[in-house]
Picture 1 (cartoon, rainbow, N blue to C red):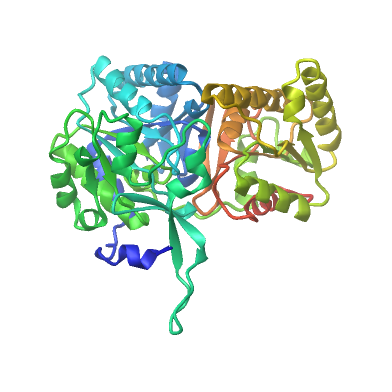
Picture 2 (tube, one colour):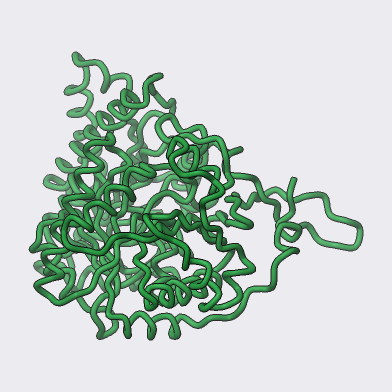
Length: 501
C-alpha cells in the first residue's frame, strides 16, 4: 500500500494560483474551448456554461453568443456520448463537431481550442478520438497539432496523477504509527474494477505506458513528455519549456493532485500556446474549470435550483404542480449499486421500479415489459418520488462490440420509458445515474438540445443542468456519474431536490 504522503515526498509543495489570474490570461487570448464530452458527466466541475446535445452550426452560434459573468462563455460543452458508440460512429461524431464548430467560429470571429473530455479512470476511445480531432482540425483549416495534453486527474473524486502514475485515492488508510494519524493511501487505477471494463480495459496506470499500450506501440512510452509535479509547480515558463519538443501530436501527460496544480498547469499551457504551440486536450472533468479559471462552485441548494428553473419555466412555477421526482439508475459499477441500496433504505416513501434486462433481451417480452414499466411510473409519480433502475446483474458478452450493443439496447428502453413519462406525468426533477444513462436520458428521453450548466449538487462531482428548450424546459436535470461520490451521495442529492423524502 502506497501512502499519498510518500508519493508526494519527492516533489515541492503546491503553489497558490488564483482562478482570477487564469481567467484573465484566458480572456487575453480570446480562445474558446470546445469540449467534446464522451458522456455528460464532464460538466460536473463547471458552472454557467452552455451545453449542447446537438451540434449543428446554429447550435454553436447560440453557444458562442452565450455569456457567463458578462463575458463570452470561455467553454462550450458538446455531448457526443461517444463512449457508448463503436469506433467508426465515434470518429464520425468528432468530425461533425469540428466541422460545425469551425464554421460557426469563423462567422463569429472566435478562436477555438478542442478538448476531448473523457473518463478519469482512463476508459474511452483513446487514441481514436484525439487522432480524429487532430485530422479534422487540419482538414477545416486549423493548425497542425503539436501536442496532445493528457490530464485525467479528478481530485474531488479521488483520482490523482503523481510521477506520471494515475491513482485512485482510497478510503482505506494504512495502519498509522503510534505518533501519527491515519493517512490516505493510493491504488493504481489499473488495479481497480475500471481497468477491467468490458470495452475499454487496460493493464497499466503509468500514463506513458498506457499510451504505448493503447496506440499498439505506435507511440513509445519513452517518447511521451511527462510534466511531473516538479515541473507543474515550477511555474508557467518551466511548463512551456518542457512542452517545446512536442510536434506531430506528441502525447504530454501532466501530474495533478489538486486545484492549484490545475491552475498552474493552465498558465503553463497558455504560455506554451502564446509561444506558438498548438495543443489538443484529453482530460478528466475538472480540467476545464482550471483551464478557464473558474472558481470552485459551492453545491447548489434547493432554493437556488427551483428559483432558477421556475424563472425559465413556461406558464409559471410548474414545479408546484408536481410532487414526485424521477431517479433513473443505469450504471452497474459497484459504487452505484451501493448508492442505490442506500437510497432505497433511506427513502422508504419512494416507489422502486426495476427494468429487467433479461426481459428486454427477449423479443417476445420486451415491449410488454416497457409498457408495464411506464404504467407503474406514471401511477406513482403524482404521489412521490420514483426510483427507476435496471436490474443489478450486469449482462455482457465476450465481444466488446456485443457488450456495447446490449448496453445500447438497455439504454433505448430507459429512454423510451422516460420520454413517455415526460409527456404523461412530468416529474418535479430528474436524476440520471451513469454516463451512458445520463447522456441518453438528456438527449433522447428529455429531448434537451441546449442547456446551461448551473453548478454542482455535490462538491465538484454532480452537475445540474437547466434545459432551455424542449419538453423538459424548466425541469432540473441532474447528471450523476456512475463512479463518483460515496455510498450516501445519491440519497443526499435526492433529498435536496425532493419534497417527499
